[in-house]
Amino acid sequence: MLAAGICFGTTTAQETTQAITLQEAIELSYRQSPVLEAQRQAQEAAVLNRKSVWGLRMPQLGIGAAYTYMSKDIKAFDLNKEKEAALQAIGQMPLPFPIPGEVIQAVQGLDLSLTLQKKQFATVGATAAVPIYMGGKINAAVNAAKIGVEKSDQEAAKAQTDLFAQVVERYYGLSLAHHVLKVREEVTEGMRKHLDDAIKLEANGMIASTEKLYAEMFLAQAEGEQTAAGLQIGTINRALGASLNREAQYLPVTALFIVDSLRPLAHYQERVKQNSPILKQVELTRRLAEEGVRAARASFLPEVAAMGAVNAWDWQLTQLAPRWMVGAGVKLRIFDGLGSEYKHASAKRQVRQVEAMQVQAENDLMTLTEKLYNQLKSSAAEVNALQATVTFAESYLDAKQRAFSEGIAPSSDVVDARMNLAKAKVERLAAAYTFDVTLAQLLALAGETEAFGSYMFQPDFRAINND
Image (cartoon, rainbow, N blue to C red; front, side):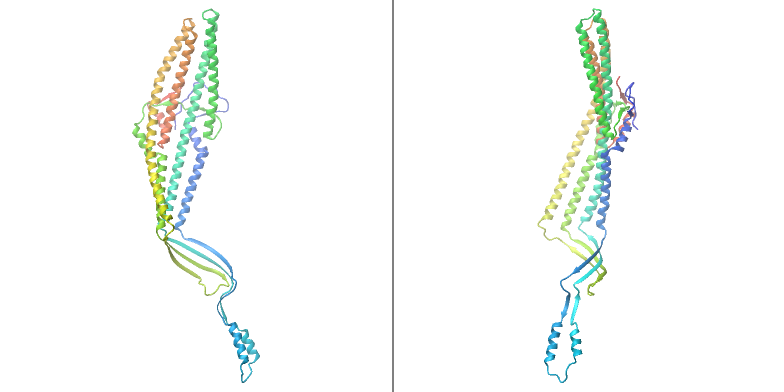
């Protein structure tokens, strides 16, 4: 769990205000995010696609029915015409006795033909085909589907780390905006008190009227900056609500913080190499390209398959047709217009392209890691330096206020001192905000977002509030 610190001394919240820790915001975004839901659906689709590809290894079974109508029957021979000619010849021959008419009629009724297949017939049967060797095409497809599952997992991990960095940025941005509003309220209240003092001193003849006008001018400016700070809270609150997929008036209660001790740069760079979802996606893309080479190479190899069929039912089908059959076939492409050669060459070029991208991606991520690491060190140092500035500015403002009340310092000195104090406070808070956001980006890059909370338990952890 992320440690929580109260960011504000006193806060007047509306009934709709929802106090929320950073850990609660992150967990809510993980549950509610449409982006992560889309990635979960993509993961399930990739798993189902992998299961479907396994079917390429299985026998392909089918049931078919067919009805056929031909122009005429298929006959082996037909002697009916010769029969008529023979009867006519016999009738013209001088015979010692006449042939009975019953015999002639019986002969005329004989069908002297052999029908192999009637012109109408129907069949219902089952077929089966079993791939024996496809040149490695099936193995390549199965491996590609497996890589697709791994790639969808890494895409989901990348989406989650991006969402984590976004929530941290908007959560602490809202916290910073509340702190800035409080600083602007302090400036406005201080300017109002300073104007009251100026009015009293002018009434006693201790300062000129221009000093009072100067205080009035900067009070109006402070009120305008306070209004702008309040509007900024609303904008960032809506952005945080969009990340959490839930609209509310959020009040961050996990404090801005810094730590001075960080692990060496090499530690983070090594974690990026091992865990970065970006590098893992590029590696999976390279493996996918290699499977594409294997699939293209299969075009040069023979394909072997076994097949079979059985006739389950028929109507008017010739008895000469077999009731079942089994066999095996071999297919080898001899020439296809050099298409296979070009596809294979293209697949190999894609592998080389991804390998080059992989080297570049690693170099870019190492550079980005170093940049973020240096930003962390710089932000922590800036917070420490600004703390001394805030302490001095508070002491300086107190001295100028006393001098003004005694009539020995102009109003501008008090205004400038107060504005410098506000500037130092805001810059200190902004530096802490930069530290926290940069740390989230670095851990997201390294795929170690769950380690963010551990920094809040380090001995040198310091909450940065408006003090």
